[in-house]
Image 1: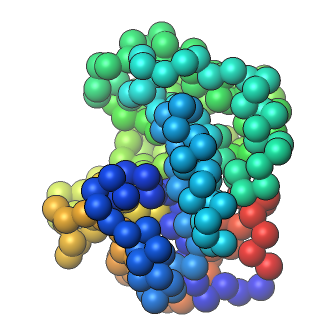
Image 2: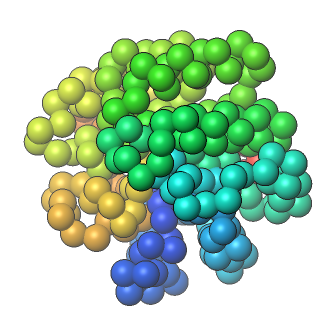
Image 3: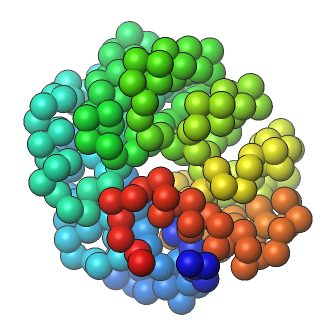
Length: 265
């Protein structure tokens, strides 16, 4: 099936609401731009119920569960058995994370981030759900962990809001990990990322906003919204010299294949 719509694979509806945005209006505006599905991402396990409530309220919203690496220091340690049970009981819970490594910020120690990341990987293995990976200034450790853990037992994974090195992108692709691109790619100074996007196979690329952060050009500096997925996807199509409709359809097909718990026909 060839899809004619886009999916925002990663946004934070809770943070948008905290900024005063009306979520129902945001979702309606996204649909007007043909962004038909949205995944809202959990960054604090203590706030999972709130995150999942958006999926319960809106038919086209799905959710993840996990602890962002920058939040590891002030969150209870993720429990593999309990979280696995939640994943199995919640029909609209399709991702594990966001998790990973962030050495740019120093709220959480490297060891605590790595330990949390490893637990998230095990949950992804047990549930078959997609591991949603955040990586910043941690390329060497990230590549090493992913390679070692994939050898222990395969799991599905997505590098979200990719802005790391070409070497890490190639390592992820070698491990059959997909890569999601945000509005950063539209920035004038994002030449390195633009060159990386050119080499990502079309069957491995997804699109996202990471809203409310990182609004694409021409909205840079403003609150990002799911509807801006369109601008990012359009830019990627130009970058890869693809027909816009072809790129849109491919990214949606990629999302469907990866997040196969989601039924979009």
